[in-house]
Length: 494
Ligand SMILES: NC(=O)C1=CN([C@@H]2O[C@H](COP(=O)(O)OP(=O)(O)OC[C@H]3O[C@@H](n4cnc5c(N)ncnc54)[C@H](OP(=O)(O)O)[C@@H]3O)[C@@H](O)[C@H]2O)C=CC1
Ligand SMILES: Cc1cn([C@H]2C[C@H](O)[C@@H](COP(=O)(O)OP(=O)(O)O[C@H]3O[C@@H](C)C(=O)[C@@H](O)[C@H]3O)O2)c(=O)[nH]c1=O
Image 1 (tube, rainbow, N blue to C red):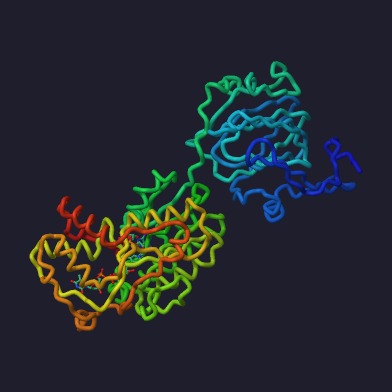
Image 2: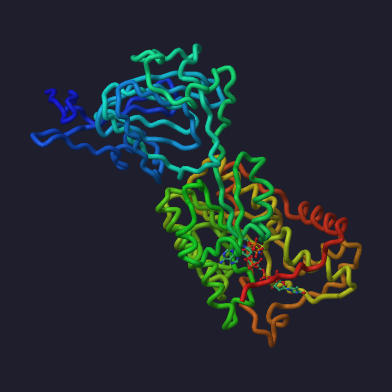
């Protein structure tokens, strides 16, 4: 049955919600159900659950725009923007025209159709958008998944381009156009939109892992933005909620309180919990709300070390405050739909770490006592960052992944001896000692005896971490070349 709408336009009130693909990859046309009665009509213009079930990306709209057009023949376009759009009309009718302006084989592909209140279209990022009104008083409405910004890069194509040759119902000479739209270039002068680069927010970007991620993400095809405590305190709910999450696709949380013994003190306890549990919970909440991917880094200190090698499904059994606070953060992150919880151990990178301390001690002629009853594997941040990037790029199944370097687990004393030898010093300068003796009389955290992580799951995704000995040798050689064995000063906020 066809009925007249309040806008005098005939609307099909019997259409079922349906989605149709088009020659432009990712561009969808939706038939909307419009319910009419003696008062007028009603439609669900965008309905996340029903439409994602039909193939609409869960594109996370953040803004609704309406452009109202008084007359027939208003023509706007052709504009390609760095965000996805979901378009329909509230009243009136338009002829819509779209040209794929993305780099790749579909560049220049055209699709046109009419949009009345019973039709909506999904226009992916980088596809040029244009329309011409076919009725007066047309309210053209669209959802977008990024806040408009003056810095956003647009790509334009001339409405009269002869190559795409859009068959406008009203000749452009008789249409109402802006001067700006008249001046856009022809197709051969258009620089195609480069492929979409996922935007990654790295928290804790000044830390060991944060630095490695910031260095490696651009070459891997990601657009990273790094923030640390001074810009985004992840434990501060108000700051986290105020962040513009429409500019982010992936959060990699490399922020943490990593002072294991400091976490046992009266001052450190709440700070460790704030950074390691409240912070990840805040990120988990926004990741869920905004449909983002959350990568979070956990530690083997969430285990008591009695059941090594630790598998991903081992239940938490943390011994100290640091491990307990990390386990709290893990629980929050594991509740987000799109997460990678990457559990690692004994991290070594640019910053304060055990290997750097040993290079420094060797250089200063100090003969340390080092525990020989804690064993595990080192994790170099270049490989940790590479493993995280691998999970993101290969769309690995969501969930928990262990990630350290490969090789025979060593004690800290064995690592120290190797560092001394590599530094041109006598490994015998390192005296083995038990953990109980080393920490006797100190306010130190209990630590797991065996830190070794089972790497089967990440290796099954095709990522094989290099051997820790190979990496250790290169790292020490680099520190010696740079003369940078000294501990950097670590400043903590009050
Ligand atoms: N280091 C290790 O041996 C291991 C680390 N991990 C985990 O790996 C991850 C990366 O560790 P790593 O790179 O060594 O850590 P780092 O301590 O080197 O870096 C952590 C960064 O996070 C910042 N930070 C602390 N609190 C907050 C906060 N509330 N909001 C925002 N930023 C904050 C720190 O700033 P500031 O320095 O000013 O406090 C620092 O810049 C962490 O999740 C850690 O728990 C797991 C196993 C072993
Ligand atoms: C400097 C030094 C350390 N040690 C011991 C103390 C400790 O048990 C071990 C390693 O020293 P660290 O200070 O690096 O230890 P620690 O801070 O416990 O390292 C841990 O950090 C957290 C963040 C993690 O998540 C863990 O994976 C692990 O890397 O070596 C010695 O025996 N002799 C020494 O001279």
